[in-house]
Length: 79
Image (cartoon, rainbow, N blue to C red; front, side, top):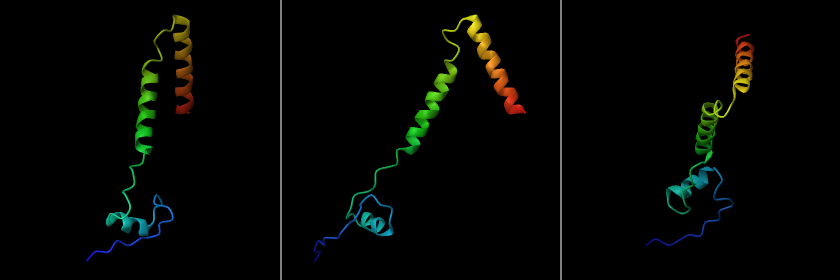
C-alpha cells in the first residue's frame, strides 16, 4: 500500500543529492536541459555569418582598409 508522502522541498532546481533522489523516484519533475550549449552554438553561428559577410557591400577603399587591419591583426598574433 503506497501512501503519498509530502516531502518538503526548499528549491526544486537546486543541484543536490536529495533532489536527484526525488527526481529519480518521480516526486519532483526532471530539470530542464541547460540552455548554455544552445546559446554557445548560436553565438558561434552568428560570428561565422558575420565573418563570411564582412566583405559584402564594401567599396575598394574599405576592402583595402579591411585587408590592412587583418594583416596587422595577423602580424600581432604571430609576434
